[in-house]
Image (cartoon, rainbow, N blue to C red):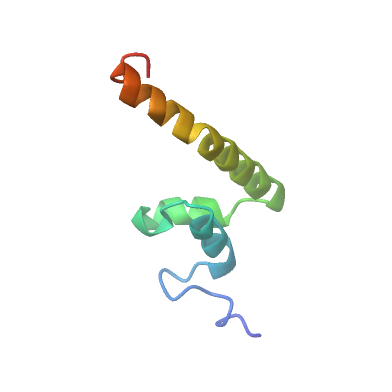
Length: 76
């Protein structure tokens, strides 16, 4: 695989990093080029932390959303 194959067609950023984030639920297509560059510059450890935090937030998302529906969102 050459360098061109490893690059995303949009903005010339590495597609594997953006693809991983996109599959995890991050709306990378809505980010600016500068924001995408920050994300593609993350170290593997930083990416792991970001994905872990996202996973934990998603795990409690429905509970918080349910409270918002029942309590009118007064507490959240």
